[in-house]
Image 1 (tube, one colour):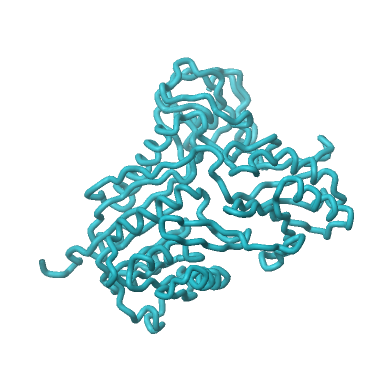
Image 2 (image 1 turned 90 degrees about the vertical axis):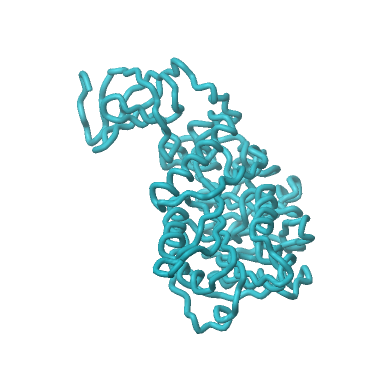
Length: 452
């Protein structure tokens, strides 16, 4: 390390090094492998860089980028003035096409390394808008005494503080442009020290802002919030405790909703419900799901982790019957409501804990299904895979937000349950971030121990 001292893992050194970036970590840091590996934020594969080590770990060191000597041809100028400080994005310095290539490579590597599987076909990526796409977000809010003002934004990338930003290029409008005005508003409230976060939900018809308040606002605070809501055409909600405490500041009026126009569907949701982040990608994803499942009027589809019916109702439009199963009671109720709202009579919704092995005696699991769709959280769906196998469906579509758990589960379905991995691919749900969203389609094959 040259002339360096070590203090609690931190490297105190003036030594500058030059190296070539070999790869990216999952957190989008460039990896230099010349000597002990160094992770360098802001560096891209193939670049020759000048850097300095700043913190020691057992297997690698953290380092700061000093200069890009030979830039990658895929390097671009970040659109956001706060990129590098704000932790909301990690890849704005990489072209959109190159971002997708990296995510496809990560999916391929996980399938091969973790699941020991390879699809017969790689699907083209689903693409959508790369700016102003994020309709749901949780923003931090903090009154910073040293600055004597409120700060609103995502957390900083390298520190546990709220990044001070003026606008956000990935949040759906008008929220992206309201960051600074929101901070100014909160700064005027008597409870400014007692507002730790804001959740945003941009519906097709309403922009909802949920303030987490640790103290009830004064009458003057409420007056200021109402004036802001009217001036910027937004709707405020206050959350005083858990999610059950969320209530509109004023009479709520019409429910939040989003559309799936190709299926003639309008889905209503609450401002804290889970909905897919990227509206256009969601529309394309639902369309691709119906296409890949190859449904007919005689099909019966089981939709696991169904949420408020995002896939279930579209599947019902193209099948004889669709059954959605979800662990959140509120989402199950919303699914039933959305079925009634859209006149979908061949869809039903049930509540079950899908993080545990399913009880085979429940009536909905004793039915026969020709197709299964599952869209689990990051932990995956390992507990329900046995039930899927016993149903012996013609096709299974697995939609995933984590390539590692997807690869693990696909490995089980292929090697233990005897299914064939027909196709897989990524979708650009979260541009400029390291999140990898993907899907895979499976069909029955020769089961382990079954004669050919």
